[in-house]
Amino acid sequence: MIERISDNIRATIALSARSVRIFLKDKAGVFFSLLAPLIVFVLFVLFLGDVQIDQTKAIFQGMEYDEKALKALVNCWMIAGVVSVACVTVSFSAQSIMIADRQNGNLSDIAVTPVRRTVISVAYFTSNCLIAFTILLCVLAVCFVYIAFTGWYMSAADVFAAVGVTVLSVLNASLISTFICTFLSSVNAHGAVTGIMSAVIGFLMGAYMPVSIFPKAVQYIVLFVPSAYSAGIFRNIFMRGALEKLTESLPFTKDALGDAFSLRIDFFGHDAGMGTMFAVFAVTFAIFAAALLITAALRGRKKIK
Image 1 (cartoon, one colour):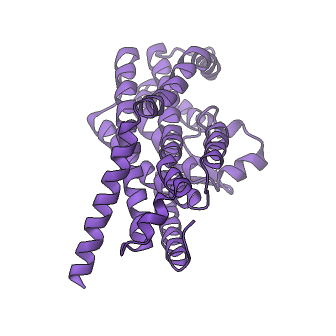
Image 2 (image 1 turned 90 degrees about the vertical axis):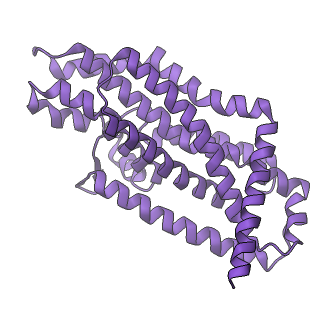
Image 3 (image 1 turned 90 degrees about the horizontal axis):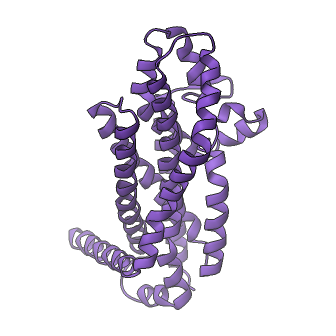
C-alpha cells in the first residue's frame, strides 16, 4: 500500500514536471500568457481609471476628502479585478498542454502505462497550478510596483494576504479549468472556450464594473460564479488601507463605498462578507475536486481518446 502511494507520488511529480517543461519551451506562449493580464491592467489604467474616479468623487460631493486616498482606492479596485480575472484566464490558457496531449495521442500513450487515470488528472492539475501561480506572481509584482508609485496604503499583512488568496484562487481556478477541459478534445475547441471565458468572466466577476450596478437578474447569476467570490476577497484586501484612510474623517461614507465597489456581495438579500466568500471557496473546491476524481476514474475504465 505504501509502495503504491509512493509510486503514485513519483508519477505525479514526473508528469507535472513534464507539463511544466513543455510550457516553458514555448517562449511565445509564456510571453503572451504574462502579457495578456498586463494588457488588461494597462487598459484599466488608461481608459477606466479616470471614469471610476469621477464616479467615486460624486459620493463626496460637497465634502472634503483625501484625493490621493480616493485615487488609491480606485487603483486598488482595478488591480483586484485584474488579478482575479488573471487567475482564471491564465489557468484556462495553460490547459493547452493537456488538450494538445489528447489531440496528438500522447495522453493515450501515457494511459497504457501502469499510471492510474486519477494520477494523470492530478498531475495536469498540479502543473497548471505551478504555471498559473508563477505568472500571477509576476503580475502581482507589477501591480504592487504601480500601487507603490500611485499611493501605497497596504500593510505587510495585506501583501501576504494578497499572495495567499492568489494561491487559493489559482488552486480553485486550476481545478475548475482542469475539470472543464477534461471534456475538450481539440486545440480549436479549447481556444474557443478560453476566448469565451476571457470575454465573459471579467463581467461576471464584477472586475470590469461593480456588481452593484448590474440588473438584479444578473446579480443573481453572479452568485453562482465561484470566481466572483475570489474577486470580492481581493477587493477587500487591496482596498482596505485606502478605504480606512479615505473614510477616517468621513466614517458615514464607508458603507456607501462598500456598496459602490461591491466589497460585500448581496447573497439573496444577505450581505456576504469575507467569511462567506471563503466558505464558498472551500465548498467549490470540494465539489470540483470530487467531480474531477470521479470523472477521471470513470474515464480510466474506457479507452482514452
